[in-house]
Length: 404
Image (cartoon, rainbow, N blue to C red; front, side, top):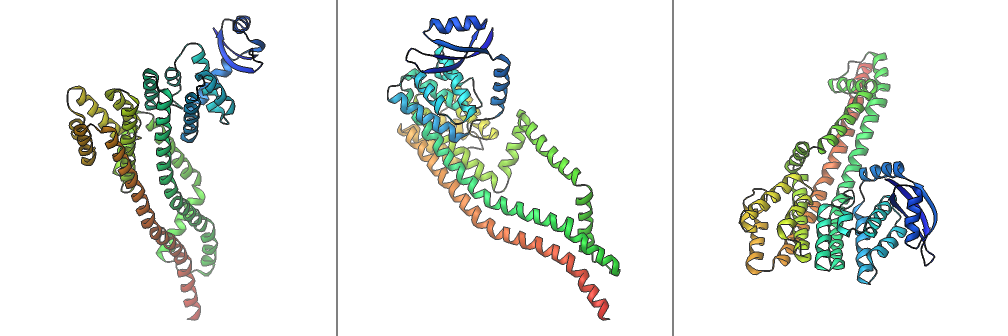
């Protein structure tokens, strides 16, 4: 079997493009003709498609694009448009080549008899497990458009929250990066100019100037080694995140970080509340939903705690008892879940948990911004002061020796 890309016109005169599997180009053309298509071209695409699929799986589709796709698909299905027709429209409208290739693959799979959930599951670079299980629940219950709208709401809220965190982190990172760049330029290029002047006058250099000159020498002669070590550290981190133990180690370190840890933890429990509310609303079985939610929290350590709670629930414990047995689950979450179990309003309670942690993340980010600004001013001033001191102290010594 080989894979062939085709261009053909349907019975309404609309140009159709896609990919199908066949023994030969002739068999592929006959198959298309039997479905009422007027074939324009059939080209073998097996190697090209395989390479494209590998590239597509390496890069992930952004959440903003996924939100737009999900919302538009829900709207078109609610309007009565068949899934295949809706996917065809989205495929033509998509400006993202990766997403367009994935949507085309999903559409072709459905045309061959597959389900939407089964086809999107084949593309983990775009559709995460929680997304797939929610779509499957919508298909089983006959409310696919409703499930897709729930997913779009969930993704929009999560995107808004993560954007707030990124926006708050952008300013400090830019300032720190610029400060580091200026400091390296001053130490590596400006300070050596003064060192030649000091050497010609045989001025006794203070300790701080000697230290800065040695740092300057290292930066000018071993810059390639510094870049190599930095690149190696980035590569090592990327490789470690691809292993279970390495990913858990990094996630544990992040949770223990002074400022980043609380933000990541609150983001995780905001996602927990929001995604569990979607699970309840869309009809996904709770144990199956918890498995998908554990993968969607963004932190393997917290996800493992939720997965352990799922196993305890399977053994007969209530959800509140199972969550309370984990030290990483905040008592507030456990108490709110217990209230939801007692009142039968679990979905509303979980939404309130998500809203609470949304506010907590927002407040933490604002406090971080308020604290980091004076710290940055102090850091920038400190760097300028040290470099200036390393230059000015020998000059003062030189002026003093001339006056004597």
